[in-house]
Amino acid sequence: MIKFSEYFNDWLYGNDGYYSNYKEIGKDGDFFTSVSTSAFFGGAIAKKIISSIDDGFLPSNTTILEVGAHHGYLLADIIQFIYTLKPDLLKTLNFSIVERFENLQVQQSKYIKESFGDIINLNHYNDIKDVKLENAFVLANEIFDAFSCELVFTNDKNTLQQAFVENHKIQFLDCIDKNIIKHCKKYGITKGEVGLYYQEFVDTLCLNINNFEFLTFDYGDKYPRNDFSARIYEKHAVYPIFEEGLDLKKLYKKSDITYDVHFNYLIDCFKNNDIQKVVFNTQLKALVEFGIIELLEILKANVDESTYLRQTQNVKTLLEPTGMGDRFKIINLRKTTNK
Image (tube, rainbow, N blue to C red; front, side):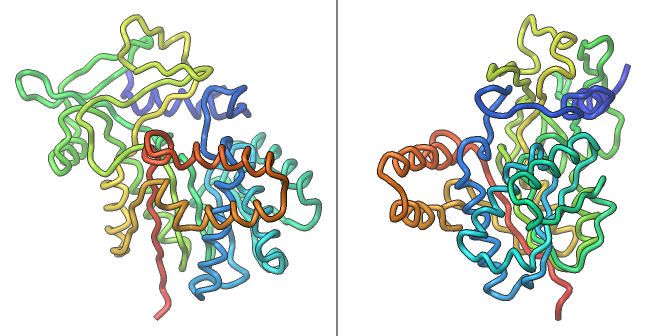
Protein backbone atom coordinates (compact mmCIF):
# COMPACT_ATOMS: atom_id res chain seq x y z
CA MET A 1 0.00 0.00 0.00
CA ILE A 2 1.37 3.41 -0.98
CA LYS A 3 0.30 7.01 -0.47
CA PHE A 4 -1.75 8.48 -3.29
CA SER A 5 1.03 11.02 -3.98
CA GLU A 6 3.45 8.17 -4.74
CA TYR A 7 0.92 6.52 -7.03
CA PHE A 8 0.27 9.85 -8.79
CA ASN A 9 4.00 10.52 -9.22
CA ASP A 10 4.68 7.05 -10.61
CA TRP A 11 1.69 7.37 -12.96
CA LEU A 12 3.18 10.48 -14.57
CA TYR A 13 6.95 10.22 -14.03
CA GLY A 14 7.87 6.64 -13.18
CA ASN A 15 9.28 4.05 -15.57
CA ASP A 16 7.14 4.35 -18.71
CA GLY A 17 5.09 7.03 -16.95
CA TYR A 18 2.69 9.15 -18.96
CA TYR A 19 5.09 12.09 -19.26
CA SER A 20 8.22 10.01 -19.80
CA ASN A 21 7.49 9.76 -23.52
CA TYR A 22 6.32 12.35 -26.01
CA LYS A 23 2.54 12.68 -26.23
CA GLU A 24 0.47 14.59 -28.75
CA ILE A 25 -1.52 17.52 -27.40
CA GLY A 26 -4.57 18.90 -29.18
CA LYS A 27 -7.02 17.14 -31.48
CA ASP A 28 -4.88 13.99 -31.79
CA GLY A 29 -3.95 13.84 -28.11
CA ASP A 30 -5.74 13.37 -24.80
CA PHE A 31 -6.50 17.03 -24.10
CA PHE A 32 -6.23 20.61 -25.39
CA THR A 33 -4.04 23.32 -23.87
CA SER A 34 -3.86 27.05 -24.51
CA VAL A 35 -0.65 26.42 -26.46
CA SER A 36 -2.36 23.97 -28.82
CA THR A 37 -5.29 26.37 -29.24
CA SER A 38 -3.47 29.41 -30.61
CA ALA A 39 0.08 30.67 -31.22
CA PHE A 40 -1.17 34.03 -29.96
CA PHE A 41 -1.03 32.60 -26.43
CA GLY A 42 2.75 32.58 -26.80
CA GLY A 43 2.54 35.90 -28.62
CA ALA A 44 0.91 37.60 -25.65
CA ILE A 45 3.59 36.17 -23.34
CA ALA A 46 6.29 37.41 -25.73
CA LYS A 47 4.77 40.88 -25.55
CA LYS A 48 4.83 40.65 -21.75
CA ILE A 49 8.51 39.64 -21.78
CA ILE A 50 9.39 42.54 -24.06
CA SER A 51 7.52 44.91 -21.72
CA SER A 52 9.48 43.62 -18.71
CA ILE A 53 12.74 44.33 -20.57
CA ASP A 54 11.58 47.71 -21.85
CA ASP A 55 10.58 48.88 -18.37
CA GLY A 56 14.06 47.99 -17.10
CA PHE A 57 13.19 45.15 -14.73
CA LEU A 58 14.98 42.53 -16.82
CA PRO A 59 18.13 43.12 -18.91
CA SER A 60 18.22 42.44 -22.64
CA ASN A 61 20.48 39.41 -22.04
CA THR A 62 18.06 37.74 -19.63
CA THR A 63 17.22 34.04 -19.86
CA ILE A 64 13.73 32.94 -20.83
CA LEU A 65 13.33 29.76 -18.81
CA GLU A 66 10.40 27.43 -19.43
CA VAL A 67 9.66 24.70 -16.89
CA GLY A 68 8.19 21.63 -18.57
CA ALA A 69 7.99 22.58 -22.25
CA HIS A 70 6.56 19.37 -23.71
CA HIS A 71 7.31 19.57 -27.47
CA GLY A 72 8.68 23.13 -27.33
CA TYR A 73 5.73 24.72 -29.12
CA LEU A 74 5.19 27.51 -26.59
CA LEU A 75 8.82 28.57 -26.48
CA ALA A 76 8.92 28.54 -30.28
CA ASP A 77 5.80 30.74 -30.44
CA ILE A 78 7.39 33.17 -27.99
CA ILE A 79 10.60 33.31 -30.05
CA GLN A 80 8.65 33.85 -33.27
CA PHE A 81 6.67 36.75 -31.82
CA ILE A 82 9.78 38.36 -30.32
CA TYR A 83 11.30 38.17 -33.81
CA THR A 84 8.19 39.90 -35.19
CA LEU A 85 7.90 42.56 -32.49
CA LYS A 86 11.53 43.27 -31.52
CA PRO A 87 13.96 41.13 -33.55
CA ASP A 88 17.15 42.67 -32.12
CA LEU A 89 16.35 41.05 -28.76
CA LEU A 90 17.06 37.62 -30.22
CA LYS A 91 20.71 38.65 -30.50
CA THR A 92 20.99 38.96 -26.73
CA LEU A 93 18.33 36.78 -25.09
CA ASN A 94 19.09 33.29 -23.78
CA PHE A 95 16.65 30.37 -23.87
CA SER A 96 16.50 27.41 -21.50
CA ILE A 97 14.13 24.59 -20.57
CA VAL A 98 13.87 22.54 -17.39
CA GLU A 99 13.06 19.00 -18.50
CA ARG A 100 13.75 15.81 -16.53
CA PHE A 101 13.41 13.36 -19.44
CA GLU A 102 16.34 13.13 -21.86
CA ASN A 103 14.22 11.94 -24.78
CA LEU A 104 12.01 15.01 -24.45
CA GLN A 105 15.09 17.24 -24.30
CA VAL A 106 16.14 15.77 -27.63
CA GLN A 107 12.67 16.38 -29.08
CA GLN A 108 12.62 19.99 -27.86
CA SER A 109 16.11 20.74 -29.18
CA LYS A 110 15.23 19.22 -32.53
CA TYR A 111 12.06 21.28 -32.86
CA ILE A 112 13.75 24.58 -31.95
CA LYS A 113 16.62 23.76 -34.34
CA GLU A 114 14.19 22.96 -37.17
CA SER A 115 12.25 26.15 -36.49
CA PHE A 116 15.10 28.65 -36.10
CA GLY A 117 18.35 27.02 -37.22
CA ASP A 118 21.42 28.35 -35.45
CA ILE A 119 19.78 31.64 -34.42
CA ILE A 120 18.63 30.16 -31.10
CA ASN A 121 20.94 28.34 -28.72
CA LEU A 122 18.78 26.25 -26.38
CA ASN A 123 20.11 25.11 -23.01
CA HIS A 124 18.58 22.33 -20.90
CA TYR A 125 18.46 21.70 -17.15
CA ASN A 126 17.43 18.34 -15.74
CA ASP A 127 15.95 19.88 -12.61
CA ILE A 128 15.11 23.33 -11.23
CA LYS A 129 17.81 22.62 -8.63
CA ASP A 130 20.42 22.79 -11.41
CA VAL A 131 19.45 26.32 -12.44
CA LYS A 132 21.82 29.10 -11.35
CA LEU A 133 20.99 32.44 -12.97
CA GLU A 134 21.32 36.14 -12.29
CA ASN A 135 18.19 37.12 -14.25
CA ALA A 136 15.34 35.18 -15.81
CA PHE A 137 11.79 35.31 -17.05
CA VAL A 138 10.41 32.01 -15.73
CA LEU A 139 7.39 30.51 -17.46
CA ALA A 140 5.48 27.53 -16.08
CA ASN A 141 2.45 26.58 -18.16
CA GLU A 142 0.24 23.93 -16.56
CA ILE A 143 2.88 22.33 -14.35
CA PHE A 144 1.48 22.65 -10.83
CA ASP A 145 -1.49 20.45 -11.69
CA ALA A 146 1.11 17.74 -12.39
CA PHE A 147 2.79 18.00 -8.97
CA SER A 148 2.03 15.05 -6.72
CA CYS A 149 -0.86 15.52 -4.33
CA GLU A 150 -2.55 13.68 -1.51
CA LEU A 151 -6.29 13.04 -1.35
CA VAL A 152 -8.06 13.77 1.95
CA PHE A 153 -11.57 13.22 3.20
CA THR A 154 -13.31 14.08 6.47
CA ASN A 155 -15.59 11.23 7.52
CA ASP A 156 -18.86 11.47 9.43
CA LYS A 157 -16.92 11.22 12.69
CA ASN A 158 -15.10 14.44 11.72
CA THR A 159 -11.82 12.52 11.34
CA LEU A 160 -9.47 13.55 8.53
CA GLN A 161 -8.54 10.60 6.37
CA GLN A 162 -5.85 10.19 3.74
CA ALA A 163 -5.91 8.14 0.53
CA PHE A 164 -3.70 5.12 -0.04
CA VAL A 165 -3.54 2.84 -3.08
CA GLU A 166 -3.16 -0.90 -3.31
CA ASN A 167 -3.59 -2.84 -6.57
CA HIS A 168 -4.98 0.33 -8.18
CA LYS A 169 -7.72 0.58 -5.57
CA ILE A 170 -8.03 3.76 -3.48
CA GLN A 171 -8.91 3.50 0.18
CA PHE A 172 -8.94 6.06 2.99
CA LEU A 173 -7.25 5.60 6.37
CA ASP A 174 -6.98 7.98 9.31
CA CYS A 175 -4.45 10.71 8.52
CA ILE A 176 -1.50 10.84 10.92
CA ASP A 177 0.71 13.12 8.80
CA LYS A 178 1.08 16.31 10.84
CA ASN A 179 1.98 18.41 7.76
CA ILE A 180 -1.22 17.40 5.99
CA ILE A 181 -3.33 17.98 9.09
CA LYS A 182 -1.77 21.42 9.63
CA HIS A 183 -2.27 22.36 5.97
CA CYS A 184 -5.93 21.33 5.99
CA LYS A 185 -6.62 23.30 9.16
CA LYS A 186 -4.90 26.40 7.78
CA TYR A 187 -6.84 26.43 4.50
CA GLY A 188 -10.10 24.91 5.71
CA ILE A 189 -9.79 21.78 3.57
CA THR A 190 -12.15 18.98 4.52
CA LYS A 191 -12.17 17.11 1.22
CA GLY A 192 -10.04 17.20 -1.92
CA GLU A 193 -6.42 17.48 -2.95
CA VAL A 194 -3.46 18.60 -0.86
CA GLY A 195 -0.37 19.53 -2.90
CA LEU A 196 2.41 20.09 -0.39
CA TYR A 197 5.17 19.93 -2.96
CA TYR A 198 4.82 23.45 -4.38
CA GLN A 199 6.86 24.95 -1.55
CA GLU A 200 10.07 23.09 -2.35
CA PHE A 201 9.88 24.16 -6.00
CA VAL A 202 9.28 27.82 -5.08
CA ASP A 203 12.04 27.80 -2.44
CA THR A 204 14.53 26.42 -4.97
CA LEU A 205 13.49 28.92 -7.62
CA CYS A 206 13.92 31.84 -5.25
CA LEU A 207 17.28 30.55 -4.01
CA ASN A 208 18.80 29.87 -7.42
CA ILE A 209 17.73 32.92 -9.45
CA ASN A 210 18.59 36.34 -8.09
CA ASN A 211 16.14 38.42 -10.12
CA PHE A 212 13.20 36.97 -11.97
CA GLU A 213 9.70 37.49 -13.22
CA PHE A 214 7.52 34.42 -12.83
CA LEU A 215 4.38 33.62 -14.79
CA THR A 216 2.24 30.50 -14.52
CA PHE A 217 -1.05 29.44 -16.08
CA ASP A 218 -3.13 26.59 -14.67
CA TYR A 219 -6.69 25.57 -13.91
CA GLY A 220 -7.90 25.98 -10.39
CA ASP A 221 -8.83 28.82 -8.09
CA LYS A 222 -7.75 30.71 -4.99
CA TYR A 223 -9.85 28.72 -2.57
CA PRO A 224 -10.20 24.95 -2.16
CA ARG A 225 -13.43 23.48 -3.50
CA ASN A 226 -13.76 20.98 -0.66
CA ASP A 227 -14.55 18.37 -3.23
CA PHE A 228 -12.41 16.05 -5.33
CA SER A 229 -11.20 17.60 -8.58
CA ALA A 230 -8.70 14.81 -9.43
CA ARG A 231 -9.51 13.48 -12.87
CA ILE A 232 -8.10 11.53 -15.79
CA TYR A 233 -7.96 12.63 -19.44
CA GLU A 234 -7.94 10.06 -22.22
CA LYS A 235 -8.60 11.06 -25.83
CA HIS A 236 -10.58 14.12 -24.67
CA ALA A 237 -12.80 12.08 -22.37
CA VAL A 238 -12.69 13.16 -18.72
CA TYR A 239 -13.07 10.67 -15.86
CA PRO A 240 -13.42 11.83 -12.24
CA ILE A 241 -11.07 9.79 -10.08
CA PHE A 242 -13.96 8.26 -8.11
CA GLU A 243 -16.29 7.63 -11.06
CA GLU A 244 -18.18 4.41 -10.49
CA GLY A 245 -16.71 1.51 -12.44
CA LEU A 246 -13.53 3.39 -13.42
CA ASP A 247 -10.65 0.99 -14.10
CA LEU A 248 -7.54 2.76 -12.81
CA LYS A 249 -5.32 -0.17 -13.76
CA LYS A 250 -6.34 0.16 -17.41
CA LEU A 251 -5.73 3.92 -17.45
CA TYR A 252 -2.54 3.86 -15.35
CA LYS A 253 0.38 5.56 -17.16
CA LYS A 254 -1.59 5.54 -20.44
CA SER A 255 -3.58 8.71 -19.74
CA ASP A 256 -3.09 12.05 -18.01
CA ILE A 257 -4.02 12.49 -14.36
CA THR A 258 -4.46 15.97 -12.91
CA TYR A 259 -6.33 18.16 -10.41
CA ASP A 260 -7.22 21.80 -9.74
CA VAL A 261 -4.42 24.00 -8.42
CA HIS A 262 -4.93 25.68 -5.04
CA PHE A 263 -3.63 29.16 -5.90
CA ASN A 264 -3.79 30.69 -2.42
CA TYR A 265 -1.33 28.06 -1.22
CA LEU A 266 0.92 28.66 -4.25
CA ILE A 267 0.83 32.40 -3.57
CA ASP A 268 1.72 31.77 0.08
CA CYS A 269 4.73 29.71 -1.05
CA PHE A 270 6.13 32.85 -2.69
CA LYS A 271 5.15 35.06 0.24
CA ASN A 272 7.14 32.70 2.47
CA ASN A 273 10.12 33.83 0.37
CA ASP A 274 9.39 37.53 1.04
CA ILE A 275 7.64 38.11 -2.30
CA GLN A 276 4.55 39.98 -1.21
CA LYS A 277 3.28 41.48 -4.46
CA VAL A 278 1.67 38.61 -6.36
CA VAL A 279 -0.83 39.29 -9.15
CA PHE A 280 -3.65 36.74 -9.48
CA ASN A 281 -5.86 36.91 -12.55
CA THR A 282 -7.99 34.95 -14.95
CA GLN A 283 -6.34 33.96 -18.22
CA LEU A 284 -8.82 36.23 -20.02
CA LYS A 285 -7.82 39.34 -18.11
CA ALA A 286 -4.11 38.53 -18.16
CA LEU A 287 -3.86 37.92 -21.91
CA VAL A 288 -5.80 41.10 -22.66
CA GLU A 289 -3.52 43.08 -20.34
CA PHE A 290 -0.45 41.51 -21.96
CA GLY A 291 -1.64 42.81 -25.34
CA ILE A 292 -3.23 39.93 -27.24
CA ILE A 293 -5.84 42.22 -28.84
CA GLU A 294 -3.10 44.54 -30.13
CA LEU A 295 -1.41 41.51 -31.68
CA LEU A 296 -4.61 40.67 -33.55
CA GLU A 297 -4.74 44.24 -34.86
CA ILE A 298 -1.19 43.85 -36.22
CA LEU A 299 -2.26 40.58 -37.84
CA LYS A 300 -5.33 42.20 -39.41
CA ALA A 301 -3.16 44.77 -41.15
CA ASN A 302 -0.91 42.12 -42.68
CA VAL A 303 -3.02 39.10 -43.75
CA ASP A 304 -6.15 38.31 -45.74
CA GLU A 305 -9.55 38.35 -44.06
CA SER A 306 -10.02 34.57 -43.86
CA THR A 307 -6.68 34.12 -42.06
CA TYR A 308 -7.51 36.94 -39.67
CA LEU A 309 -10.96 35.50 -38.87
CA ARG A 310 -9.55 32.02 -38.29
CA GLN A 311 -6.93 33.30 -35.87
CA THR A 312 -9.47 35.52 -34.14
CA GLN A 313 -11.70 32.52 -33.53
CA ASN A 314 -8.80 30.63 -31.93
CA VAL A 315 -8.04 33.59 -29.67
CA LYS A 316 -11.71 33.77 -28.68
CA THR A 317 -11.36 30.19 -27.42
CA LEU A 318 -8.46 31.31 -25.21
CA LEU A 319 -10.50 34.21 -23.83
CA GLU A 320 -13.98 32.67 -23.60
CA PRO A 321 -15.38 33.63 -20.15
CA THR A 322 -17.27 30.35 -19.85
CA GLY A 323 -14.27 28.29 -20.98
CA MET A 324 -10.50 28.72 -20.95
CA GLY A 325 -10.70 32.44 -20.21
CA ASP A 326 -12.04 31.96 -16.68
CA ARG A 327 -11.20 28.30 -16.07
CA PHE A 328 -7.47 29.03 -16.29
CA LYS A 329 -5.87 31.36 -13.78
CA ILE A 330 -2.46 33.01 -13.62
CA ILE A 331 -0.08 34.33 -11.06
CA ASN A 332 2.55 36.85 -12.06
CA LEU A 333 5.23 38.19 -9.73
CA ARG A 334 8.72 39.61 -9.54
CA LYS A 335 11.61 38.79 -7.25
CA THR A 336 14.64 41.04 -7.04
CA THR A 337 17.79 41.31 -4.96
CA ASN A 338 18.58 44.73 -6.44
CA LYS A 339 18.55 47.59 -4.00
